[in-house]
Length: 209
Image (cartoon, rainbow, N blue to C red):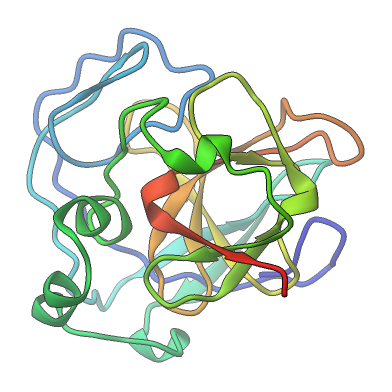
């Protein structure tokens, strides 16, 4: 999907999730997990297995814009991703923490990522496929404990409506490999007013030459 300054709508692949027993204490600002039993910041998240197998169903996908989300319907197909690997291949390629976030929609602990303190000039990339996602000039300190950005690179991500924890949020996925990166919120700074709240473990950093 393009950045919020681009009119492009993108398609996303739905992933079935079976969530068991959720107690939501507070979900207003954090980058919450969709899978795995963990406490992240103010949230106690649901536990249960995640099924990443392709589905034959269709899903409602959202292209999030400053003036509100616009819903479209996407046919699920692994061909939407330029980079597609089996679950076993992803497990071999990624660390256990990267796999938990990128492939199982987990969430790292706040203030745990070294990228919180990365203020160099360069690009933040997808840890799963090295696609450039965010320019360093768009990074800001949100105070949440997760790397945050006010704008995404053009044609870098897909954004999908996520209702898995009892509230509607916009999940951010890598456009090229489908990896879960985090969520986007509308409480960011100017000029976009957006906060891309990303898991640092799902990112890499490529300094400018």
